[in-house]
Amino acid sequence: MFMIPMLRMNDGRAIPQVGFGAGFATPDGPEPSSAQVVELFPAAIEAGYRLFDTAQVYGNEEGFGEAISKGGIPREELFITSKLATSAHGREKALMAFDESMRRLRLEVLDLYLIHWPLPMFDEYVETWKALVELQTSGRVRSIGVSNFTEKHLERLVEETGVVPAVNQVELNPEFPQRELRTFHAEHGILTEAWGPLGQGRGLLEKPAVTRLAKEKGKSAAQIVLRWHIQVGNVVIPKSLQPSRLRENVNIFDFELEAREMEQLATLEGERSGPDPEAFEKRF
Ligand code: NAD
Image (cartoon, rainbow, N blue to C red; front, side):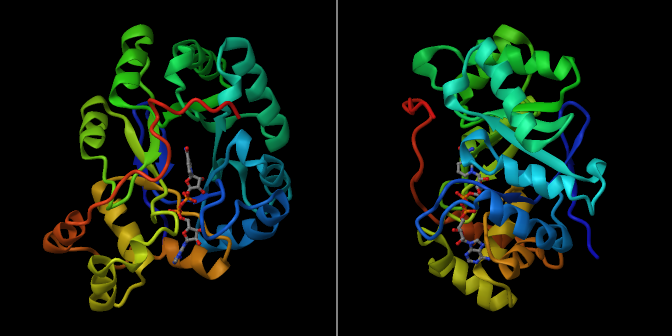
């Protein structure tokens, strides 16, 4: 069986380039419940997934805890990500939220822990980041990162703590490629992880620039878009609750997009579909 490539993070650790997204409902489907996670986990492992992306707010950490503890795959082979909810900013709350996530996940050590959103209007994310640094120093989490941070938020973390996040998980796809942010990440050694990589069922996979290439290459539209991510160097965590699509979404390592094909995808234009990180203030 093929292996999903690993990318190196700035802390020396490696992360699989494709993972299983267990996130929020999208227009064409709900987030997986814990029961669905338990059911889908063996199919995901069988398809080659080792990276699993959950969060406190997704309500399915318990499902991962159960699926992982059932065994079948050595813990060292898995890469589990979770995220700190926006209601848990601040040192004490962050440390407590982490403990609760770990209890639900039934894990001793987490592979990657992210601050889910910065909520800059409350000015707590630097303190929260210091709590994540503490967790890493104490060995409870291997790698630490952020999600939905802009250049401005990242700069502040680095200036005030000297610790550069290993990963920034942001909304990103060929219609919303976040070119400036990716350049900033590259300059600072931050890995870009794309959420909403397939455009969240909002029409990206039906765009002619994508379907034309799919036809020419004999691949599905989702495979074309995911291959684009791989070639720009992103980690991707597409979400699907269908085993056949889980397989399809990792079967993207037997073909390449040529430079002119990448350029065709660069002509796509679109907007951010999620909230603006600077303005997002919801506590969950
Ligand atoms: P996505 O772009 O992965 O789209 C998911 C939708 O695409 C699903 O509803 C599914 O129906 C469809 N799909 C999946 N595979 C397909 C295929 N092969 N062919 C056709 N359609 C297919 O969007 P997403 O779920 O929002 O993002 C992926 C993951 O990113 C989430 O599950 C979650 O883990 C993470 N996420 C993080 C944040 C954040 O704030 N950090 C926000 C949203 C999502």
